[in-house]
Length: 226
Image (cartoon, rainbow, N blue to C red; front, side, top):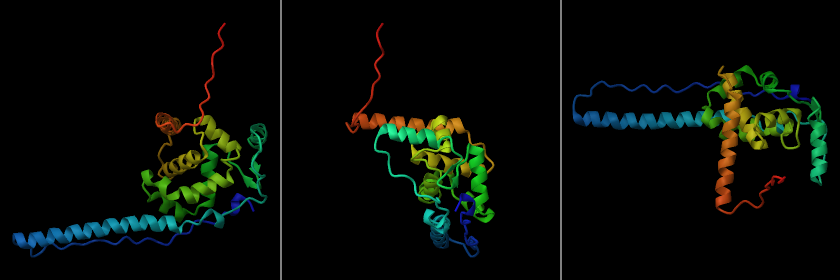
């Protein structure tokens, strides 16, 4: 089974609940207080409804196990760094891995996602705020990209993202979720700036862990003295 047979995302229609509040018969402080109390209650209810809708959108997306899976099982983990590097160098030259088509660049990745996500579901994904999309979709659409586009073992697309400055597989998935979200909204992805934000976040985390003594090993290349 290849990526073109990915199950289409299917979500139920969303009919937002309209909150209509009458302001008639508010003639004194007591009634105004009651009105404000009701208004606050309605606003809280609407906020909860909005959050529940976002959660509904996410839960309606199929888990990766329900989507296209590789035709062949990946090899076991490499036993040595040399073996891993050999496999990596081979993988990044292939347009298919385990029977799944691997995008060659960002635009190609958008084409593949658009092909395999229904128009209705793309609209639903657009309703998720950008600052929430990674948290909500990382273990679904993000996990599918991690597994099928071989971010861990290496592929020509993961190599493309690595060359852009996104080096951690989980960061690659989150990068793609944000990039695709912007693509759906017709916004520029701003690849360099977005990639830079992930590099800076990783660098900051590394510095903090180093201060706390959590860094196990740090490789330092010494310059040869002439």
